[in-house]
Length: 147
Image (cartoon, rainbow, N blue to C red):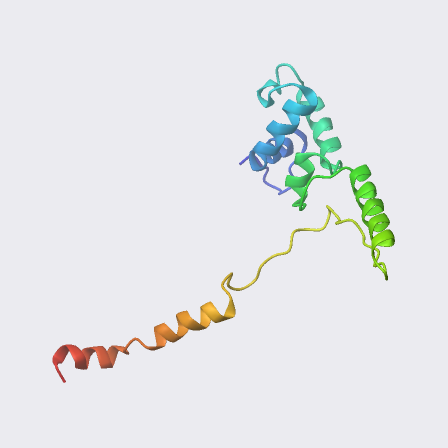
């Protein structure tokens, strides 16, 4: 990893660290938005220009770079979110007796983190019960010795 002694990573080194950590997102956005391979940085595109593009992309919620860097749930343009909200509320207003208006999902909200086991409580209880049914070490020693 690129870095400096003080912990602050300036300009080109900071860009290099971002690219190393989020390479697929950078490759996708560089190809689709600039029609350049990521390997053109330093040759077809200066490091300064690449840094400025990265700053712009990191603020655009429709870019994969922004999604990857900020840990967003999905990439979405602001227009998409506005239209999604308008459409959902229009449908709710005209189809439901008591319409509950909805807000579009916020892409800046991190995806929910799952804590604990992905198993259901019933499945977990079966596993624990099966483990409790195993003989303890002392019981196993008595069984082996024939006692």
